[in-house]
Image (cartoon, rainbow, N blue to C red; front, side, top):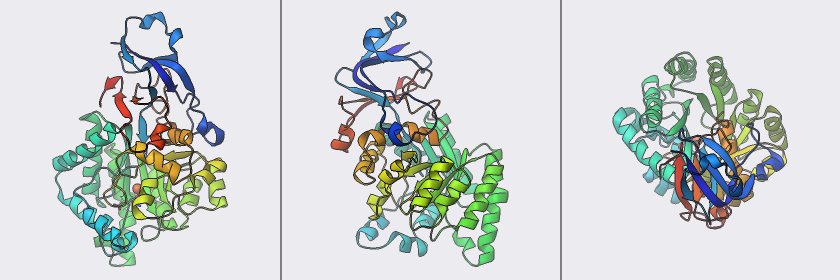
Length: 415
Ligand code: NIG
Ligand code: FE
């Protein structure tokens, strides 16, 4: 049955080109006042405009009264690690007591502790634990998810994580893109010698990535290119192997220091470079010239007590910016992207309109999905949020309040 979301005080269409948006374009939300959105029975947007101009073809459609409300695209979380086993609340307390994230990691805790739990768990149980989280995330307004592996660090367990990510899409109906992050950390069994470490990189390039691509489990590959993880040479090898297999590229870059990951992302024309706490003008210029989306993860800065990436400088430099949760068991288990959007304003110095573009269209563009989601335009999927306010700035002003009233995916109410 066709449906009309009718008479919203503001429809944030984010109408515009499919590519990532930069500079002034990030503030242009394409707002239609007194607007309506018509959705066909296939779950696609059929028409958007001022309600007075609604085509008569939709006269009989079911109406969702949006008076006093704003309508916006469903949020797109373009960086999550949401498939993991167990939790690391013990580290939360250690860190709040003064322990350092990198020190915990170097001692074999951190990522490696989630690796032990994720290797040990059975696939159905991993699915159940992950399903609980993704359901909450969608209830907060996220309708598209990028999900990384990276708590397996061996073929079997990486495959198990990505199979769960695919099942969340096929079996549970979530909109998901997957990323193989086998280069997340050097696993315990490869920490003995430089040769073991090199052999692990070989395994990623020659065994893990090819198998996962063959099984169509990965859309992208990612590397944690940073202090204590992988250096630029190692990261380049993995990313080049991934590219040769047809995968898109994403990079965890410059989170812990000015470690060269952002320049590498630019050199390889990655879809996204993420974190970016330590950048200089030259890095920003390279990202802009290569068209890399800079993905900010302010929740992680908040949890780890780190500086915030300078989002305003990135926007002023003409780099397209996205915002995501980084939802993971250690450095930030935040699930609420609307809340993180607010943090991008207070921490990364984005304006509310820029943060909305960052968490919708630009995030979708970094995933190659902007022709489907991230804006409200005819032909796009009807993934949309009805807000309990007419002013989207309330997501920032009243950060954390329950302002996402209705969540719709493919024209079906999901929360
Ligand atoms: O993006 N930086 C590396 N990976 C994650 C942290 C993962 C973890 O601590 O389990 C991140 O912050
Ligand atoms: Fe991450």
